[in-house]
Image (tube, rainbow, N blue to C red; front, side, top):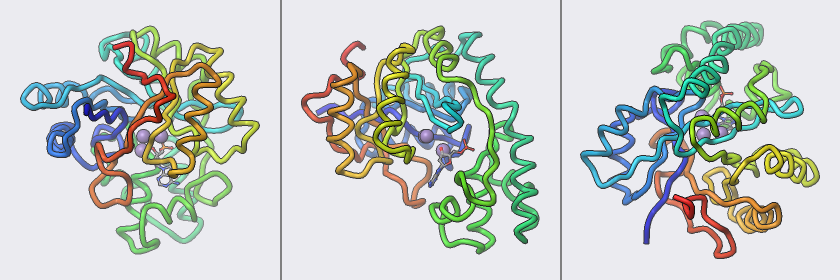
Length: 276
Ligand code: AMP
Ligand code: MN
Ligand code: MN
Ligand code: MN
């Protein structure tokens, strides 16, 4: 059986392993096809490509684009993108630009809550200073002993409605899909079960994504509970979308899913790789 893992992160965004270490770990886990999908960033791909050439892993060039959809942050994965495409590169650079200013505002919010030094602390965890994000803040708060683990930091501080959350306006959905298509890639709605928007808004999300040209949704992902998998398999079929599989691995021992350790797609799904 061919093992696909089409969603993971390296130190080029908020993962803890370098692209090379990630590919080597994936090889050890028996992954055949691995997509590196760093947030708003392609810079990890050349190192991952070189590592993959020396291993059994087939690397898929990917990216995870942050978008704002009706005021909410949603993620869209691009698979098989050309990392040299100027439209995609410029779009991602634009998305990254806002991150530094947002980080400063997050640090101010945390300072107000009695947690000083978060900006410097978060940057210390950022392998790529252009890609400072919430996970880096979370790791700092865990290191400081403010909260016991990364998951709890998000729950208490960093998600919408919590005091350390700072809204940021990312690219639009149509825009992000356009960048991915310009680069020859397929647009995949990431972890649709994670957004906590309820049934009707989830249907609207899938419907708009499909109408804007999206090709697939993640059905099997480290972010879905076992009972969400059949639900999103049905929705993928209903909306005429293909299905993808990805761990969303970030770091060993951080509580997320291990590389390649995923169940297979329900038989009714048309895999996103069926067109490769
Ligand atoms: P950012 O792009 O800076 O907004 O950070 C988004 C990242 O934060 C995601 O890719 C996850 O790695 C992490 N994240 C978001 N929500 C959670 C959560 N509830 N628990 C753990 N990590 C989360
Ligand atoms: Mn992340
Ligand atoms: Mn995501
Ligand atoms: Mn991700």
